[in-house]
Image 1 (tube, rainbow, N blue to C red):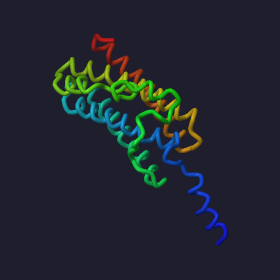
Image 2 (image 1 turned 90 degrees about the horizontal axis):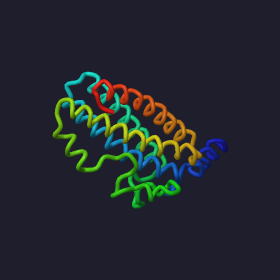
Image 3 (image 1 turned 180 degrees about the vertical axis):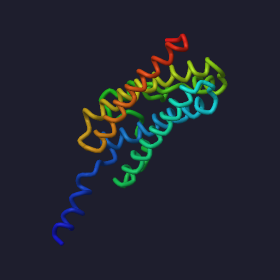
Image 4 (image 1 turned 135 degrees about the vertical axis):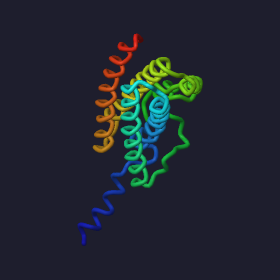
Length: 182
C-alpha cells in the first residue's frame, strides 16, 4: 500500500510541467508535423508519380502517428495540447528562428497554395523541395529537444524523428535528381 501511494505521488512530481522543454517541443512539433501531413496528403492525392505517392503516404502516416504520441503524452501529463506561449520559446534562441509566425522549415501559405494547384512533375518537385526544407527544420528542433529534454520518452521520439527524416532527405534528394531538379 505504501509503495502504490509513493508511486502515485512520485509520478506527478516527475511529469513535465506546462513551461517545460518537453511540453513546448511536443506542442510545436505537433504543429510542425501537422503541416507535413497536410503537404503529404496533397501530394498523395494529386501526384501521378508512384514513388512520390508512396513517400507522401509514408510521411503522412508516420508523422500523424507521432502527433498521436505527442498529444497523448500531453494529455497524460494533464497539459493542454496548445499553449499561449509563442512558438519555439522552449528552445534557447528559438523565438528568433520563427519567421512570420512559422517555425524552421515550415512552408508559407503561398507555398501551400501553389502546391495545391500544381500538377505533374511540378507538383512532385515542389512537394519534394518543400518537404526537404520541412524535414531540415524538424531535425533541428528534434536535435535541440534531445539535448535539452530530461524525459526518456521524448528523447526516444525525437531520436526516431531525426533518424527517419534524415533517411527521407536522402530519398528526396535521389528523387529530385531523377526528376532533373536539385
